[in-house]
Length: 525
Image 1 (cartoon, rainbow, N blue to C red):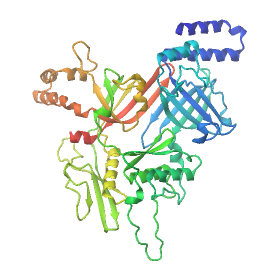
Image 2 (image 1 turned 135 degrees about the horizontal axis):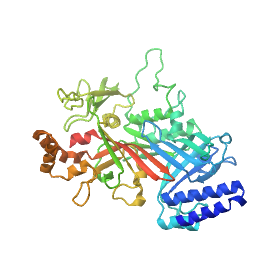
Image 3 (image 1 turned 180 degrees about the vertical axis):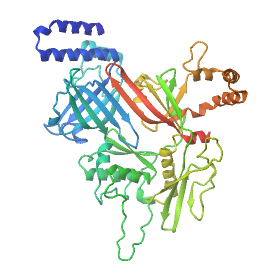
């Protein structure tokens, strides 16, 4: 295929003098992109919908001013950031593929598709130019004849900035995008606009999205958890009696400044749930706690990792216990809930009746290890007094803050975790907070060690001790670290913190992930 492409490029060069410049440039750019596809197996497409705004406009042309196109990008990157910030995407296109003056575009939505194509279809598209019903080559990601799709949409959102750059190296279009949570984060709520707490949580959020703005109308809200979604009012405290001469009302803190996303997060947290954005949908999910290796992505240095890095924070480590408090007007006392607690301890109670247990969990440790203390972070909530809900809030808050003792990052050119079918492309679907198991392949007599750590893991404990002694460490230190090295197994499961997916026509796809350990896993072990 590459030979044929090069022959076509040479033939085109011979015709340059007799061909209009515009035609020559267009054909040459097409052949160059085809050559890049052959070399890198580029399997990325970006769909653009310009004109109206999602969800209606991206799903189909709303009027004759709305256009939808499918383009092979020069490069693209996706950043998945979790709850703290919207997911982001940057896309670079050849200007010859999208020769649009940004002054003619009112708004633009982007859908980025990344996946894997079977070898026979890749060959049919590149060599024979075989296309689907929509005109796209079968060598690119798209719908199959049976309606299935190899790969999937990996990012959808809005273009914040459309930049056209003209230079001697080539004219390009750069799109800076944010996901569907962006309009929710930007939209300021007016006083009186809030979620109806008497409805199931997903229904209340759905009504708010449909009523507040055309931008968010039609966005689907889904529940992800056991049973039915919670009803916030079921656990809400009774109304306090108004002072004389005043009207009783429930104020929403930050009425003038609160965005729609902040209000959704605030309401979800009060029920022990987490709001997420998945493509065009808002998903309300139950918080997850402990993870096992059975459902974790698996990455092995020496097999499917290009590089691996670990960082351990030493002095100043603070992994606070979370205590949630809520005033209960029915009993006239404050309820509390904590997470984590030791086995057998009460996780919730009433101040003055069943007080929190004595601190037994050291989470502030000096560099010397002397005088460890417990740090407790207190969170006040007002939407609920249900002990079960308070415990979920404490657990959820801890999961978002108490998990950054050990950090790391890795990169890989694989789109599937170790041992998985290449067509599952599970790394492309990875999200912040997903469990991941990070392993290092041990060196064997047949293989050269991939790292000093791999070599140490392959040693017996006695040989490991002797190796450390040969480096000049005393016997006590060597004995202790030789034994501790065997205990690394229970720290192999982490949680993803952020994911970055980079595509380039020359280098293909590269995935980089940051991860953090989950403190409770270590303590329970």
